[in-house]
Amino acid sequence: YAPVGFPVLKEAAKNISQGKVFSEFFLMSIATVGAFAIGEYPEGVAVMLFYGIGEVFQTMAVKKAKTSIKTLLDQRPDEATILLNNQPKTVKAESVNIGDTILLRSGEKLGLDGELISESALFNTAALTGESKPDSKTKGDTVLAGM
Image 1 (cartoon, one colour):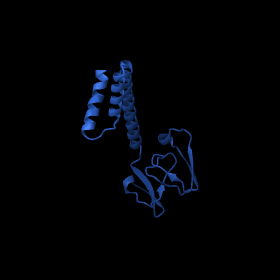
Image 2 (cartoon, one colour):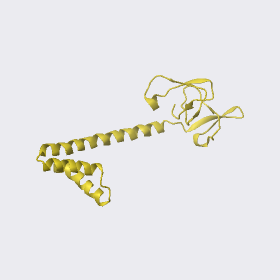
Image 3 (spheres, one colour):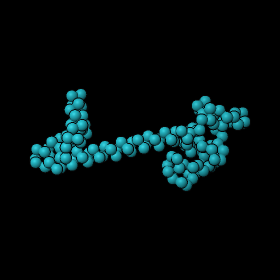
């Protein structure tokens, strides 16, 4: 019990001293102390053990999600082609203003969120949704960076 239970009990005590009584650590501590109080020692240990295993899986999932988000952001183009006096001009994505018209050619990724002004278009949204089939958009639809 000590290797998995002590860190949880310690965190529960710390939170209580800071006025945060009903934390997950407090609830896990109460569950195991209650199990021990009624003589159900294996259940008390199991609660802490499964909680610890759950924390490991949660940490792994959060790390993977952060990595995926970073990868997605790194794929966003740094430049955009805008129409200036009906002529295409390549500019830094952060210098595009609200109301500018972005020209997106076939195969390019959209660097900024916007609204589609063409009648229709197909977008590869695999990086955003995980679906491999193209997403059909029509005039007035919202389009997202990364499409």
